[in-house]
Image 1 (tube, rainbow, N blue to C red):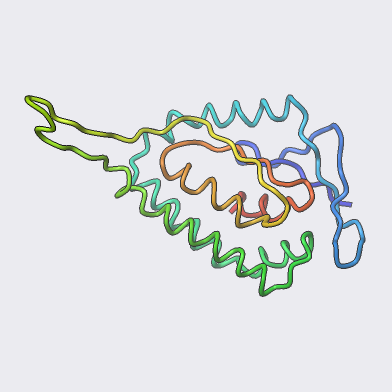
Image 2: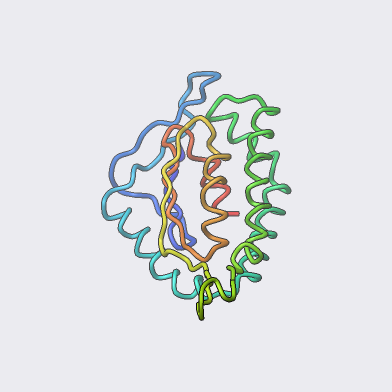
Length: 187
C-alpha cells in the first residue's frame, strides 16, 4: 500500500509517525495512506520555505509571472490525471472534478497578472508639499489549510497569488483527499 508523504523543498518526504487511511468513497476501499506530519516535519517545511524566501522575493515579478504561466500550462496538460485523482479520493464525477480544476486554473490566470497588480501608486501633491505613494512587498512565508470538499480548487485559490507576489507557501491539504494537491504541487 502506498503511503503519501509531504513535498518539502522539491522532494517527497514520508514521515515516520502516524498515518491515516485514504478511502475511495465510491467503493469504501482503502486506496492508500497519508503520512500525518509531525512537529519536526512541519518545522522542516517552514524552514525550507524560509530558506527559499530571500531569493524568491527578490525575483522580478515578471519572472514570477512566467512561472505561473508555465504552471497554468502544466495544470491544463494534466487535467485528466488531476480529475481522476480528485474522483478517486473525493468521489466527484469527472465533469465536476474538471470544473473544480478549471475554477482553480482561473485563479492561476489571475496570478499571472501580478506584475501589473504590484506596480503600486503615486499621487503628487496630495497635500501642500506632500506626495503619496504605495508599494507592495512580499510578506514572507504564508500558509494555508484547506478542507476536503474542493481538494484542487481551494488550494489554487491560495498559493498562486501568494507565490506570484513573492511569498513562499506551506500548504496543509485535507488528509481525506491529499493526492491531487500533492500532484499539483509537484507540477
